[in-house]
Length: 408
Image 1 (cartoon, helix red, strand yellow):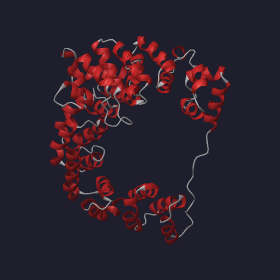
Image 2: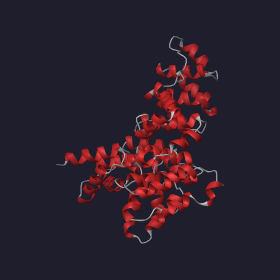
Image 3: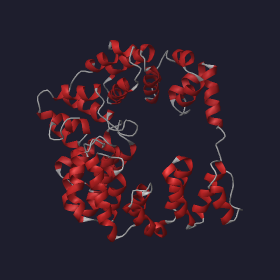
Image 4: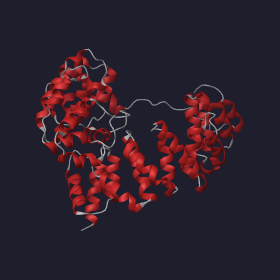
């Protein structure tokens, strides 16, 4: 990833400042293509970029042809990495939402011919327009295994799914199974057992152990703190369960969490998580040190807890590091937490970040920014666009509409 001081580096990170700057820079369209073809997301499972890049392509009035060329590159049939085309597929789908209808034909063609055909099919289905998916039901029936089909029809009210189900019995059966529901895994009921029985069961490696741990959490039993030190270094389902259960202890867990955060014995991440949620001002140095350590190691996922805690505690000494992390981190998913922390710790400083956030790639950031940014002619115009944009996440255009309505 390029430096955050360059336009390409800012576009890769999905920063609002890049979206605002791009129109003034010659060749910015080529940089957008570069980002889409070489997916820059640090965590592709949770980070958003497609609407951000699609909007830039609309604003810069550039063609989608280079993205089509990328889809149908010769590598497509020999490269089994679905991420090679994933972002491109999503950007083309968002271009359709933004009324760039020329993106539909290549996306349809790729759903029929491409290696990552299922994702393209899913993207077209999500658009909810039967005219765009005409004739593709045959592809669904021929190529989808039962599990693929189950997830494809996850929204039975989608007009595309309804149209397909009306003409293809296999799809109709998948919808019936979906709407009828499936049996969900239930943890064994441990509510009648004594505390000592639960503690004994918690040391077994089965479903009963997980259920016992969760029941101890419901009872807010302090023995969970000792259990965490025993189980967390080994991870597994019981480790996840004990983390969840200890959070139910709330402030009762803080003294032990301070010990964990100071000693790398396998419980330090849980310790930071507890201090972030329930710690006091005395824990600010620990949280600040943890954030510094995460930033230095570029362990961006681990930085989330400390950021939330520093914001909750309104730790003014953290502001410089929060600002640096906003600019430098390639993990866009952090920015909603960073923006919330900045608003709480330094409201005046946060104004420039809430303004920038109206153009951010993450919808959570745009939502917070719509609620909080200072109202100027520039931000008012942006809020009007967000409110009117049918491709926007509903939480964002609702926030933008509410903010605008409050000013009249």
